[in-house]
Length: 248
Ligand SMILES: NC(=O)c1ccc[n+]([C@@H]2O[C@H](COP(=O)([O-])OP(=O)(O)OC[C@H]3O[C@@H](n4cnc5c(N)ncnc54)[C@H](O)[C@@H]3O)[C@@H](O)[C@H]2O)c1
Image 1 (cartoon, rainbow, N blue to C red):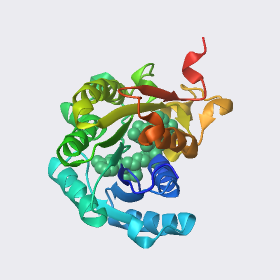
Image 2 (cartoon, protein in one colour):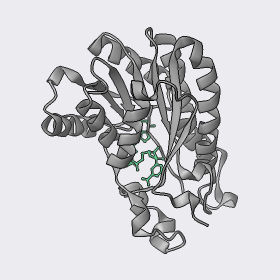
Image 3 (cartoon, rainbow, N blue to C red):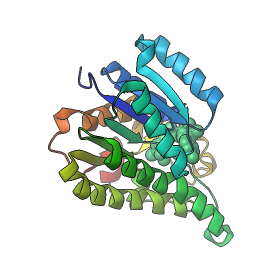
Image 4 (cartoon, rainbow, N blue to C red):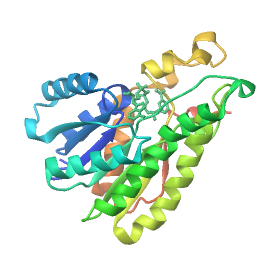
């Protein structure tokens, strides 16, 4: 397996794409700490992942962590090290969207979205640089919204674009520490976040069923970027969108 002996933190892991990432990393042999906002959802996800993967119980841990709070991020990193003895991988997957016209958006709206979608990744990268003693891998979950977008999601699109910039900066600074930093840009993925999107529900954003991927499709690309197969991949933004962005 690709990730034997590695220990990983996956943020936003209590559901959606994050839970699929955690499942894939467990199936690749990693120990995984699930980080998310709610203890009840974390416990349910841990139990489900235990059943799905039959991983030894000591390979699954969880921490309540609001990624927009630096103290909670530092505590989650420490919890992974306490549970597994070392920390090698973080997948910055937690994400939040907001649907509002710009003239109705407030500074607080922007701070909330940027706090989760951008600062959350910054806080974990900082912890990784401080605490991944033997090198490691960071994967940031951006979005096709980093490249092309739609009305009503300005803070989300800005955060996801800035996350690619952060990926480049962190890849440069991570190189001497042997911490590889990359990003994925998922397209439409079959989760509640997609189908609850008011632009999708109203028909303003038309989703071709052939362009909808699964959480497992995204998890597979992330497992590759976490693994030694990607040892020479640094600062990349890998589109995982079924080709949606390349069509005229
Ligand atoms: N679903 C898609 O079509 C799609 C497409 C492109 C990118 N993405 C990105 O993939 C990631 C996962 O999306 P998803 O579809 O699984 O969404 P989701 O809403 O199902 O899951 C997001 C998870 O993040 C958690 N979360 C939210 N705020 C948090 C915080 N402050 N601290 C910790 N956890 C927090 C939520 O509790 C939830 O479990 C996001 O970054 C999203 O932007 C999704």
